[in-house]
Each structure stands twice: as C-alpha cells, then as structure tokens.
Length: 196
Image 1 (cartoon, helix red, strand yellow):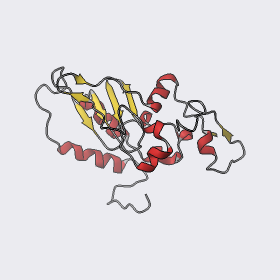
Image 2: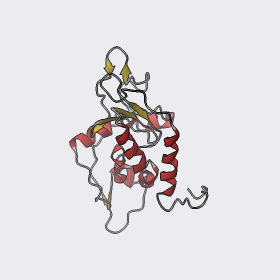
Image 3: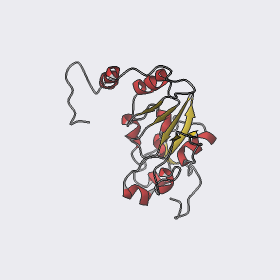
C-alpha cells in the first residue's frame, strides 16, 4: 500500500479511504419498486469482502496480513442496509457459502491455475472449476447451499481470533519460529496429498 497516495484529508492510516470509496455507491440508481420482497429478491455483488467472517483466520493464511486488506465494515453495513438475500463477493479466492444474519454470502472464484494446483480443496464450491456456479435460476430461484471447505469449517468451529501465537502446520514452515510461537493442529485434519 506504500505506492498509494490519496488526496487530503483521506489517509490509509484510518477508515477515511474505505468510507470515501463506499460513498461512491450513493450515486447508484434506486432499487425498483418491490425490491427485497419475495417476488424480487436482492442479489448484490462486490469484489471485496463485506464481513471479516468470510475469510479464514490469520493463523490459517500463508499471508497473515491478508485480512487487513480484504474488505471494509462500510461495505458490510451497506449490504445489510440493502437487505440482500444473496451477496456474491470475491478477492480472497476461497470457496465460500454461508448465511450470516439474513444474507447468504457466496464466493466462487475462478482464481489462478497455480491456486488450483496448490490448494484446490479450499477453492472448490459447487461445480467449480469444471463450470460456472449457478446461484439463481429464473424457474427455481436460488440454488441450494453448496459445499465449500472453509465456510463448512466455520459452521462446525467457532472463530478464535485470539489465538495469535500459533500457525497452521502448512503455514508455520514458511516463517521463523519465535519464542512462544506454536504450531497449531491441522484445522481440518492432516490431508492426504490428493486433497490439498
């Protein structure tokens, strides 16, 4: 982010940039009459994450600082005010299908070929990568919930962001171990080489 410069009074040291970018949405067209009702559900989209809960915790990430730049609470507040029944997001390239509050959140990233070779299980959702994921059909409505590794992990396990001294085994090898540092258990059990 050191290459970004923002006009005053915006600063990347506070929330002013995220707030200013979010405010650009105020210029969008109004929703049609009845939007958000049973006959006209709202499906919204963003590149960035509207909620931090839509990303694995930092101890599970090869880039632990990733979560500092994946989205904003302003985007999350906007999706909530909008009343989206489904919000499709991207940026982190993890397959995801979870309901938080009244909104279903789906990420079905096409990603990079290297990601599919290195960690296909964390990207898979629905029929990806063979074909695009269908989330809405005009005859049948919303597609059923899809299997996705990380969102299913968090359906079974509470988030524990207070664990900051332990890294997942697949991450720990990339970093020098400091005093007090630990290697955590595999979050979903040690994989065999075929399921990485």
